[in-house]
Length: 250
Length: 357
Image (cartoon, rainbow over all chains, first blue to last red; front, side, top):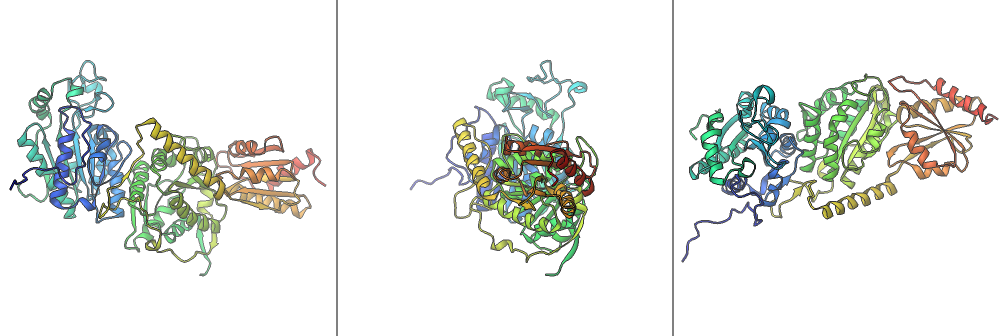
């Protein structure tokens, strides 16, 4: 008798991803769905997708989903979680969403120790709008709004939101990972699972920042884009646990 | 229940609690701070109620959006500049067809303005202050007791029509103390189930609350759906009060605090035999256009009195067309007219048009 060793997670719908070839979003969506399955929380999870490429996350994740205005995911999620504390609530946000237009919401949700799980996808550009400079764009990086490269004293320095949120006393777990290789994908899944578990244990605010690749806007092939994350992006945004108040090994 | 002497902001807060509101988020701004302060005390006594002092007006309205998505009756409050900041959220709430109650205790503007009572946000409230061409029901209470009834009704209508509702008061309505009687509180558990709320896909398909419609045809369809909803609201929910209008020769048209002042003026004129009356829109949107037009069968001079330099007067003119002459008296900036001042304006009008018989 054949043994099934791989299947679509229950929390993932049969919709075909609309994302560009090589984009990290589809990997991350799947990881979230796997974690939701493994934790057995599909029937009590509510997701808050952002404005941007991942706005359509609700087509792929088979859980209750409530859209948020650009940058406001943490406030919307706070409302859902506070109104129905038994739910498991996560936000899915890009760098522009979480670290530019939504900085205040992010800092204060972390500071209040909201029992939320934030999935922060950092690809260094505004993807959906065509590749403009994001708060996380690297110094010197060319985008459609930094044609000569990002110049810090003109365009600002790359913002490290995860470090900022680690300073907030209400955050309990923050880790930066990537999805450039199977090894990193597995580490990311572990981190996502932990960030959900932290919420279920009622400990405080948890966030996983995932360095992701945007081959389309970076104008690189998928392989080159992954290499860029490993060779360049990780230098500015080193991987690892940024904060873990439970101090368990990850 | 016995009468209680309370300021308007406290009345709204207590009425909301009794209407089953269980989520409040707000940000400090004068002249409405008594409202969140009361909420923080009151909700501390109720196990399943949540008060959040948000980091911003934006966060507050978006928290309300989230709580409403989760199926809980939710409210936020602010004053003019803060309400401007909430407009993005109000547009989304309208677009997602979520119920929510938004209280605006208006102050002077534009800009930072001042903290005195005005009616300078009529346009913003009634014409859709945010983007996308939506409407909100707008209630304009003019007394403490009406704050009770309209606040409670706001939650019912918000749920029934799945729409944001604005309770439009001003600094005077918020601060004024009046005796009020509250009805018995509603137990939220007894309210109708919301078959769209995000409470976990247990034994059912997963749900989505969103305002995104990428396909223009789908977006158009949704807009027409909204339009039909707004037609139904206009048909069923338009409210006004007629005060001493039956034999009046001049009808004052005023809402909220201005109407309260105008009532005093009308009373005064009646005592000296001058036939003035008051038409008071209780819903500013939908505007009681039909009733106002009917009124012009007998009253040919309307005096619109507002605490701004002329906003509702546009709706009055559109409502009555050529059937009556529309006059205007306004005091913007937070200056509060006395009944004496308004009585003077009406009297002058009567003499100018030879109506004072």
